[in-house]
Length: 322
Image (cartoon, rainbow, N blue to C red; front, side):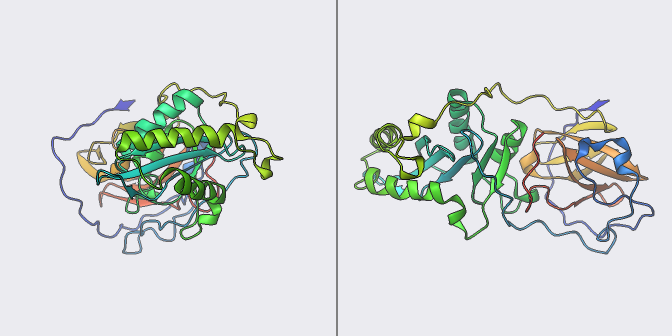
């Protein structure tokens, strides 16, 4: 059964009150695809019904993969902004392939807004296909410090495309060391002096990308050039696939405000999930588990109209691939 819900307006977020204790509630489940019996066999989470709302996750980094083959892992970042000759700022978005060091993208953007970054990544995916994972820091637009599990609209889109998200620990840029070393070379050779405008600066970036990939051997690559090793991904970009939740009672469309509506009650999830479908399944009277893709997000208490998040599924362990 599919339920599509729209709301006529959005009200300010209200901090929820405590969760009313329930008997025989399930604990934190594993992946939502584990099976229907999965949500009915365990005891209540110790934090549920303790008189306070579970705090949001703080950025802590995730597990980091080896990225041994091309397109196993891409690394993305915004090199620090700098002022162009016309007084405007340039925000270079860069993406490299971890295994081959191939510089996939160096785009002179005018901001770090998510919409601009999504457009740049979409063009890159059309040209190069999809990686297995993307590693970034915890800054905007790759993460949202105040959102559920620090997700952003960009990282939610990556998840929908089957791309795992990896995040370095705050204050540990060495975990993206290869990418940072490329940034040092980029800054020295393509930004000093800067271009007069974004078009001139982009032309400098294009020259740098060509030289970096095709003319410079790397000692770590046995003196081969990145272009000698990199090949496009075998996973083509075909847009976002449809979501379905066959093991849940129904699915609901998250509103533009980041809410869902159940039994005429509005529950805040997260604005980064706006427009996404989530699955819900009742596990006790008035208590529902809510899932996004194969990730269980938390419990909804209809009486209190709150979401109690579970442990961060994108936390210290590497996010599972579907």
